[in-house]
Amino acid sequence: MHERIVSTILLATDFSASANLAQVYTTYLAVTLKASVVVLHVSEPRSSTARALNEDEIQASLRRLEETIGEHAVPVNIQWSAGTPGDQILSIARELDADLIVIGLQGHTHLPYGLLGATAQTVTSSAPCPVLTVPLTAKEASPCTFSAPATVTVRRILAPVDFSEPSLDSLECAIHLTRALGADLVLLHVLEPAHANWDLPRMQGAEQRRDHWKARLVNLAGVVKSLGLSATYEIRSGYPSDSILACALQQRSELIVMGTHGRRGEREIHIGSVAEAVLKEAPCPVLTVKHPKFISGRHPAIQAVLSQSTE
View: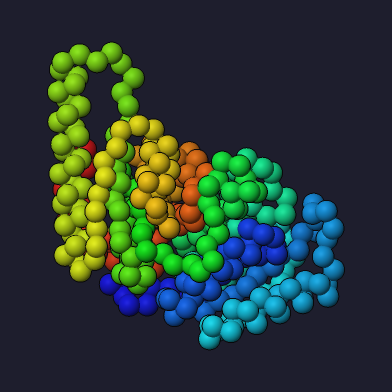
């Protein structure tokens, strides 16, 4: 496992409250991971904000961000482009060969009640690298219980795993971050409810399936511990997004790392329904992984688990 897993972080900002929180997390990660930061602002041709910022205001805001992040001895550059924000962020991320994109869940045009912003939707669906989305605080988006900490630290990471390839990709990222941030890793597998009448044979079959997945989680936790990391596991029954959110709250997780698609199938454009539901109401930032850019090789840290059958 490489010691330096992230070299370049792209922070996309529209100077909204959500983007300001994203900047705090960007600084924390840049300092901890010894990465450089590129701050990007995209001006829309027809801005839907209440009042579009003029050129001087944009330049001044970018310079303030550059100075604020730079105070922490982080190499930082600023960029300003025009166009559709989501498309521009993706294009510049590819040009920079960015390892991580950080973005606020909702910008100036956000609606209440935890709706996923259009830019965040586009970026998480198609980014060439993992994307960290930072939610609004509880006061600004009703279902979101996230409270912005005075000082950012990530000491507990939740990694939902359904043993599909995308979830194993995201788990590999979670393992790297667990080591780099000195965090504890919580593995979670969710058994979805059966939609049929229960009889004795079904109950026995369900118990056998639970034992099967528990054994795999135990094995997986052992693999993580063999790397010198702290790992625990949970197995829950219920709808995946609800169970992930409940586990994050109860475990006081400070970061959720998950794939954009799982066993329910992968679509080329849209983000998976489970990931989207978690993003909308997560009690902490969420790192979604569609393309696990900072993995060297194919799941090197969990090869023992991959050698098992994935029923």
